[in-house]
Image (cartoon, rainbow, N blue to C red; front, top):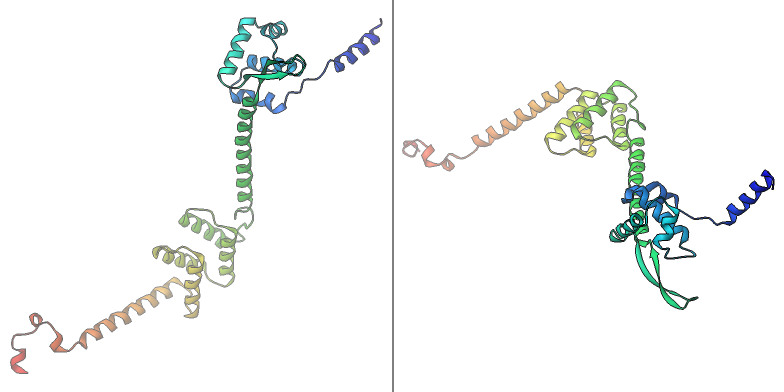
Length: 259
């Protein structure tokens, strides 16, 4: 028989000898469920026989491997003890009797848990990537130094990244001719009042706009004027209190005598 004929016969015999289906995920993740190389090879040999011989003997497995029968028996014992493999009973309809079979259902369960954790991590990474892509750094890149400074100041004060809509608010305020100084002052007052939402800051800026206040100095002057009026009202109210309503301890002892 020539070389070509031998090769062709071998190829035909190779393919007709059968194929063992081993999930790629098992081959690439078996160490994550605590299997070593020897344990994995024993499992592969069992899967190789499972269709025709659901319960291959230790001797059969040892004939195919360099490990001794004692070593393989110890490996099978460990797998059963760790519940990665089980020995179950099944009804053999041909021989019409109960027989043993290896079951790897628990192994599949362990592998499924590894897959679920891996998939969850992938989804978290995808979610974080989408969030980073929708963050101000990638979607709404500051167009000028004022915008850049405002984004930095707000994020530092709020302790988080600004959303796309919040950046649009900053951009709109600048477009409405609110100065960077005024916007930061509104933020400062909002934080002092314990209110950090942009709707509240917008109401502060609109109120200043109605009053024609354009700088921090003008706002502080307005505050001082308002406080002076309030103090004057309080003083005037005190002066209007009837004398007979003043507590006797505060009145002069001769007041009643001269009335």
